[in-house]
Structures are given as C-alpha cells and as structure tokens.
Length: 355
Image (cartoon, rainbow, N blue to C red; front, side, top):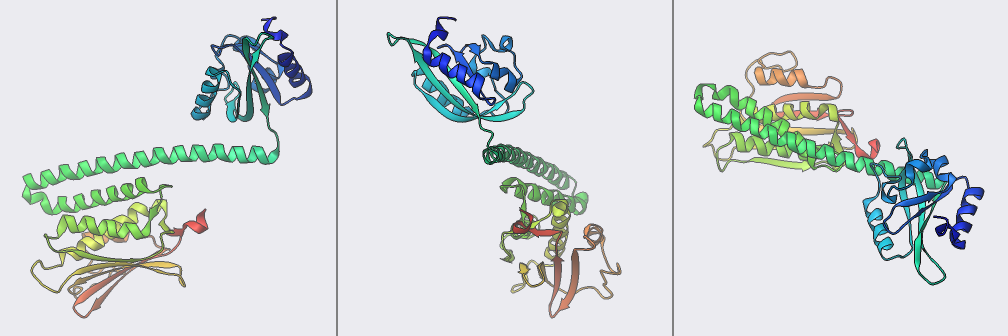
C-alpha cells in the first residue's frame, strides 16, 4: 500500500484534505472497487473506523435507502473506463444520517502511465443554501415514493372492493329475495371503491370534487338504470377544489344515496323524463353546490331537517352529513324534485390555499 501512496498527486490532495478542511475526506480504492485507505476525516464525518472500511467495496460505503442509483451507475461506468468522475451524491453516516457530498474520482497513473489506483475526494458542502436545497430534494424524493406507495394501496383496495361487490351481486342473483338489500350494499361498496380509485389516480392522493360526482353518477347509472337511460352530468367547478380526506367517503356515500334514490324514481318507459346532476362552484360564497333533479314529487309531510318521511337511505345521509360545513335541501318543483347538497370548507378546500 505504501507504493500506491507514493503518488505525489494522491499524497498532496490527501494531506491538504485531512489538515485544511474539516468537511472533506479522501478514499483510495483499486480497480475492483475495494477500499484500501481512508483519511482521518472519513471517521470524523461518517462514524466508521478505518478497520470497518478497509477491504469493503466503495459502492457499499455511504450507502443508504435514498442513494442515487443512476449516479452510482455513472460512477461505475467512469471507473471501468478509468476516467474522471464528478457529481453530487446523497451519502449516509454509520447511523444512517444523510448528508450531501461532492464526489470527485480520479485515476492515478505512475511515471510509465500505468494505472495504480483511484483517488476519491469527498467534499461536504456546508453552505446553508446548498444544504437547504439538497435537503428539500431529499424530502421531495421521499414524498414522491410515499405517494407512489399510497396510490398503489388505493388501487389494490379499489380492486378488492370491486371483488366484494361482485360476490354480493352473485348472492343477490342466487337468492332474489335478498336483492333489494344487497343492491344498496353493492352500491355503497362500489362508491367506496370509486373514492379509492380517485385517490389512486391523483398525483398527491387528493380527490377532485369535479370528478367525484360524475364518477358516482356513472356507477349508479350502470347499476340501476336500464340500457339507453342515462344520467346527465354537468360540471362547472375548478379542478383546484378538492374534498378533504376525512370527508371523502362520507360525502361520496351521501352522493351515492341521493343519486341512487333519484334514479329509482325514474320510470323506464317515460319519454322526456331524465335525471340530471350538476356541480357548480360559487366564488363569491366559496361553496360548491351539487344539484340533483329527478321526476316526481316529495311525499306529503316530508321534512328532512325534522326527520319526517325520511327512509333508511336518507337516515344514513343524515348520520354522515357534516353539521357545520354542509347543507342538504329538498325542494318540490313543477314535475320534479330538486335536491341540493351545499359544501363549504373545511369539507372542501382549494389546493392554492392548502399548499
């Protein structure tokens, strides 16, 4: 090893690094990537002793859960070609604390231009702005990985719930007398699956209000209405309006019950009669209004607020309706019923306000 360290370039850089900079260190490794010498600064910064390092491959040193695989691949390529390498790497101490280094690797040749070994200079940049920016990159990378994982979880839950709905459908077909009860359960399970599908599709696992109502309306149409009969959906709400995480499933189930009840009042053979759903945003009042209109009239004495004439479905709606940021109104119009669900913060929010 002493012959290898006789290179003037290696000893000059190593001596300068060890004595002049408390935030830099030198490693030397051979063509097979095995480390055979480290400067004292290595132990100070990483917590590894020389005995723990000597003989190990350089690719195993400073490795952690967020090591940049592409950068390591580039390093390996340059080493194989015996060429210089320079780049920023996220490295790790012995206790897995991350820190950023600028890594400069150079091949060392003797007087006869014969390759001897590689010299790697690790410079830890302590400039506040640099550390802050690199830390932010590290946090963003973790956040991206977390979001990918969460989207995959939502996707799997959605698929599982669709499987449950399929099994319930089989039971309803095998035992027709259970169909009325199971059909409602199927709709509820599929509604929760819709929510997980929306969360799994979104970049930050957020549910966009302008997608929730149309998705549920399509699901109800497929489940309840005969072929050729459709639910008309009109949406005029910005994509920035999202549904808060704790209220996504309750709001979705409320919409499912309201649209499902409306769909059941449609008469299959009545021309000119249809079911419509509109989603409108009111900037002035900072609220969203989801309006459902269907043919028919409310029963005599119906009073949702005082629980008069409220069936099982609307009882469920009452139990899930947020008391301070949502309001549900039923109105008789000539020839049809108008149901309005008004949503305000914090049930809904704008991404420009949240982020």
